[in-house]
Picture 1 (spheres, helix red, strand yellow):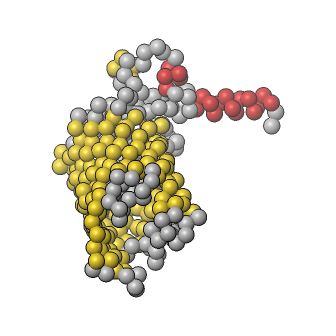
Picture 2 (cartoon, rainbow, N blue to C red):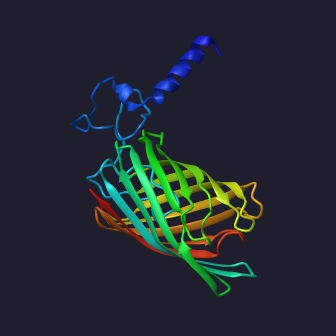
Length: 295
């Protein structure tokens, strides 16, 4: 490749993901009729053809639950969203029977500083019974930020990234006893008015339940969402956890699906169920939840 062609290629690549503020070349932004407002995403795919993206507060809320794959959009600056639920899990590996109850699975999402930045705080309480002997307690606190990176533009996806971590605040039976960091990259496409699809790729530090040694866990998911009516929606999803350099943890694969119902544009109820696809995974789980947006 000639020097001129290489320079052109580098220039096009840099322009494709420049921050929207630089592409506009304006001291004050003009976004959706609002002078001085922040753009909906941190970056833009094009160098001036479109500046969309970000939350549409006149449309129904977009939630992270009930599937494993997070939404690729933020809630919007000054907007709060509370998502919570319950999950029942069952597993019998031939030796031990494990029953889990997880609640309230609270996730608070709040838009700060800009439309594309979201603060995330999650807390949960767990109960686990192994062969009839149970233990209950709080899990470690989850903290993170979701950054809306790009809007969808034709075949180019809407994207977001979540730097995240858990801090050791939980019960001894459920706490990692150390800070565990990670990152979650999310990408999604609206195919048409009925079907959308998305995936996520994560790398997180985790603790081996048997030896308590730390390792890196890679997680991958892919989901398809369906708009059935103005109020009813559904989804199907595959996700998997892949431990790297773990002492005893094994890869786990799951398939799950569920339905959502919009009570109002700011309140959504959901129900889901899933099954494990290999021996290391739990046999099945079922759950339900509610999400509320505060504008």
